[in-house]
Image (tube, rainbow, N blue to C red; front, side, top):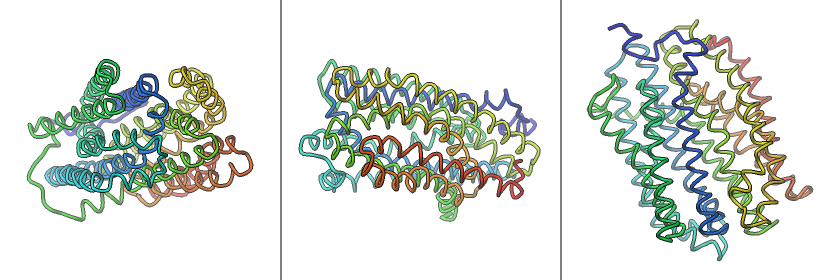
Length: 446
């Protein structure tokens, strides 16, 4: 069996084959975005917009859970894929197993710590007395499922590294369908309110987590579980490589708090509901960028590790052209479809609908630049340059947004809130272009 037959990452990719390889990851992320947004639509329509607001209030606790899982997964994937490219298969398996075990342990520790300080956390996030009961119900259940959340994030990335992106897609679709079905059962039929939404989401986490664990235990791929060597340096390297993803999620957590506090002051609970719609819609609309970056990162890492400069160059060039095209498509979808998205969430609340509709007109311009920023961060993670990757993520998700969010609403009020993200993405885009050209000779991707 040749290397190319044995490891799909070793293929000489062209535009069609690379998009085909990344397609399952793109569809998986898109479907995850869809079922996440459907989840919040159920809450908005069948509970109320205060319940919707409460999800965004506690979201800054869920962000770091996803961030930790993504940091280990993307950073660890770069380590594992590079060693596979070097031919160190046994070491790659050991590192892979250690990373998964570490993720499960971290998830359990988060559950324990979060439940112990639950009320203090919720008040600290800025919940009002009206929103506190909703927040408590939702966050309690989310924390119980924290380990499953971590595991499903890990497996989303590691299925690609194992050369099984289609399996990740199938599990994501299945988890999404189950989540939506249980949302209907728990929220609409059983009238469980926001607790039903949280339980449905938690069950959705369990499907890829349990199935992924069984798959890697059965040794059906070149990458599978084995007895790991307790090499702390592997975890440190994984965290360093994937730091940008953790920075991105933690920054999103902090800026979400700032968005919530600012909108609460300007427009009250309806303002928080409107920003919730925008934030969840942003996640949906950026899933194509994230999925494509996730799907191609292991290919980049593999070719970098194997020293195949020609294929590395070809892969990065294809990626850049694709990102430009998809950015224009997503921008147009957001600009033309913003009113429809707002209506889907807030048809029964005219005030929330109007706030959200007006916000989309300005916010949509962020999608012209965010695709390049997301891919570039993933590119440097794949090349094991966590410092540059983290810098891009930090500036686009925290640094620039925080400055604009603190300054612009003082003069422009709600318009300033909507402008914060597009301006942050634009400035990050300019910096990203500079960094890509600065490091082109070091990595030979152009």
